[in-house]
Length: 215
Ligand code: AP5
Image (cartoon, rainbow, N blue to C red):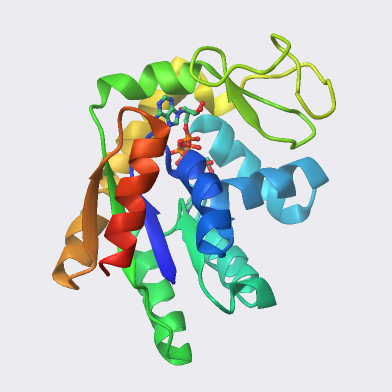
């Protein structure tokens, strides 16, 4: 099954992708995670992406498209995948469509995370991540066992540079300008399935599974 999770920053795409990857037996492909790993590793691509990410702007299409198409070549994607945070522009959606058409493996469904925008700021400003890439927590909604410490390695948790309130505003603007039009792109192809993305996490997972299975 090949799924796209589409929704604004903080709508829960990453959280739900992680929950469902095991149940559905397919990997989560997160361009945000791939880019953050490149930044941590100090690669040329990471250095190029960092200033856009820190500012809350989208990384240029050519960088992201190359990265995700390469990731999709790996054998764990043979039975499908969950695309989390990609595509985010029309150019990315078209490049993806073409690459999948060439393989005869089209997208099955696009899960559209609908959420009241007022909830997003609290979700994002409260997020804390492990500096060593062991995961993320939330001060209120998903606290670590010991306050401020990574459950895996004990490192001091940090806030993502782009989770500051001014950067969140920029990210939401980028979403509205560049990504929201993809709802129409996928609705025209009969692939868009809306879910309600606020409330209890298990209930949201169920909605997604039902939407994906009805695809
Ligand atoms: P990326 O990492 O993709 O950030 P994003 O889309 O802004 O995604 P988030 O991780 O902030 O939100 P999410 O919807 O995954 O929510 P989450 O589950 O984490 O991208 C970062 C940057 O990389 C971009 O700004 C850009 O620069 C670059 N980039 C990435 N992809 C790109 C692309 N395709 N093109 C160009 N540039 C790209 O949840 C958020 C918080 O809410 C968590 O703390 C979580 O615990 C909490 N939460 C989740 N669900 C619930 C719930 N039901 N109830 C309570 N709390 C919840």
